[in-house]
Picture: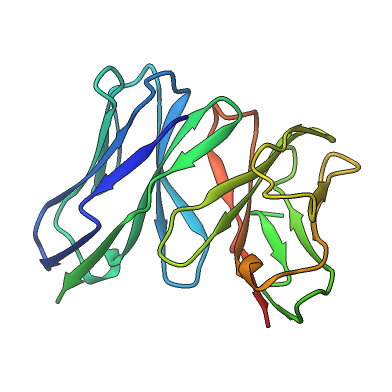
Length: 110
Length: 114
């Protein structure tokens, strides 16, 4: 069974810092990996999708990388802002479902 | 609609009652997923539909849980004889095709069993 781990569980940074969130998975037979953002009491907002054949994807200040062979992905956030404060989840598509990590709770301090 | 819509947004029910949770996926999306999220945890898979059929229901915890998608669009998750342990946020997602395309999630239904 696919297992997804996210490190760190929580992160607090001052505004303006660049930061990296980590995601690892145990089974490299994936279709894609998706990063989501979840605000308290809300649903999931899709940030970036990386197909299994891709190495990275970029959207604005966000950059996600994928190393399928080592079972790792990173989400890089440049010039963090207080509005980036949320929980970030990675999800790996394997078989018929998406497997989620438990998320990284990010706080950006003004 | 523009996104995945779930109703109700909140549901409080008494232990032992029956509840139905509704999901309206993005138009044209053939794949539909139900997930359950407990506080501080990542979403856990319940069931996946491809069209009208449940292609994978391996995540349903027991036979009190059932889901349908009769016309390949709207889906209903049904929970019989609710228990306090069923309290969670129930999330629905849809994608254009199974698993290999971007998934879009609704805002969820927060179910509280008292």
